[in-house]
Length: 388
Image (tube, rainbow, N blue to C red):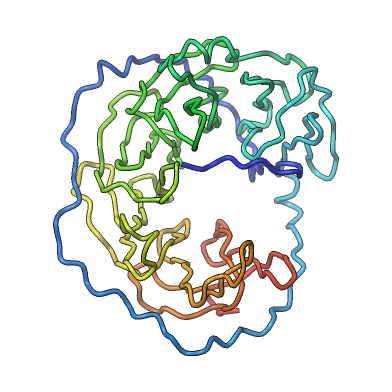
């Protein structure tokens, strides 16, 4: 599950297109009535020996000249950005920024603001409650109160809002919660839905049956991730079933690891990079890439790569991953790594950059990506097709 860190900059939520909202009625469903299904556990198999990490002296890749990127004017006209600065919500569109003058100060942590696909509503958090406001600054209303969260199970130790996001092309939000423990970061793995038009919320999945959620591109299905399971359900909470069971990954700390699935553009499958359960203790242990069809077909493995993290491109054909060469010399410093790019089956692997570098994310075209270099703390755009 994505862990929310507090940051001191404005938070940007980017919407790359404006669509008409589909106002379908909420169909509340009690998770207790969801039929049990047969899950697919990871089969027992012989793991190939991981690729040996070279022990030779690392040659740092020469500095990369940054490229100034221009946004296509046709895209810029459709682009809207909601952000929070000093408790105030702002909205940028087509070169113009407006302050909405929300009466309730908004939390400015990462993931604390979300813009609906039609650009008409913005969800935000204030003093432990989930709120919404129209993008023209009108009709600020509380969707889920702090008292509501206190009523949600488990009552001991209680829960607080964690993740929230708009269902595609609707005015409905999914959200989940975290446990109010005095140590660590522990999630309730539940799931709720709230309608921003009616201000009514319902529980879709109780604790330990939900988790981190990821909408399919067509908005019809939701992938649910827990530390040891991937589940699938319809967007209204019905037809929940398990796609894959797997061993939980040790973090050597007081929080759990939640893998990150990537939907296919056609919404008919997901791919998932699963760390070895003991990867935190040995970076040479393999990460396994799984293909998960949503039509009931049995999941299967695609490749195994010796690394502690793999980033799958949006079109599911490429991967990026780090290979650690030298640990950080001092506390707070960065380790020396090789940044690898490859096809998803592990072929055509090459080192794109090396040194104190890190991968950030793929861009939507699956050819370009963003990475950073510690030498100047700048972000750069890379391209896999021409290796530069």
